[in-house]
Image (cartoon, rainbow, N blue to C red):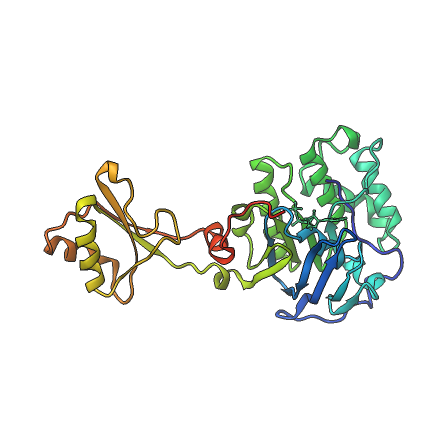
Length: 346
Ligand SMILES: Nc1ncnc2c1ncn2[C@@H]1O[C@H](COP(=O)(O)OP(=O)(O)OP(=O)(O)O)[C@@H](O)[C@H]1O
């Protein structure tokens, strides 16, 4: 994947601002649809809402339609149906006013292989009529430093590793202050350290007031930084909203008993009003490892505290081998939402 900085050649950022306050949608689509010539509906009538100030994790497996959506948002491909509004303006009609305020990391040929990273950024910045030439060198240096490419700035693009290319794409998106950053799989090709750096960068940018729309097929990677989440599957937006509403931080209690006492323990716990859950996560409500002679009972507590569990079981002369709490991961929540794993759909 290479990257392009979505900038428009005309219009200045100043005077283009349709004023947005926190809570307003920075990106809003209605019925956004893409049907490719092959007949495949890659994006199927989605209503995306990215509130101002959010870090919006646009999550879904490979092939679920994230990149196609992002390309439509930025006007890189046309929509088959539906509408797009960015920064309060219609896209692609108002692209010349909107895109200078949007930094983007998306697939597309933007970099010259025989130029260095530094020279590529100089070229991109010079092509951007809304960027001030007087501050170019300073802005380019700052962007390169920010993505950790300072030392490799002089190396030719074709000699960059995939991770370095990703970093250069990020630097291109950061050449100027932006109101919105759209990052398509920014951690592709990055090692764990690079991935952590991208997360930190996203956090910093959000703290500075930039709204970030970031796509990823790796749930665990991005869930930590997202304030909002949209879950894509097979071209549809299955759920979106504040992270806590999509993946509530509910806890499940796992009680380990002797396998032969599991049924009796379940009855005791049920009599306290607790619900033994049935298979949404991990080993479900059943017994784990009968071979080990132990069973895991997964509970939703109801009105009772965790502390009520052990005394009740002990009073019934049942052994308590362990009590622990677990929080379902976003991946488990996704499986619940879709009824399927987080694999390539088609
Ligand atoms: N130009 C195209 N012509 C036909 N089909 C396409 C085209 N581009 C994408 N598709 C198909 O549309 C579907 C969605 O692809 P898209 O790239 O949007 O998914 P994605 O969620 O971004 O996946 P990834 O995480 O791999 O980037 C896929 O089935 C893909 O094969």
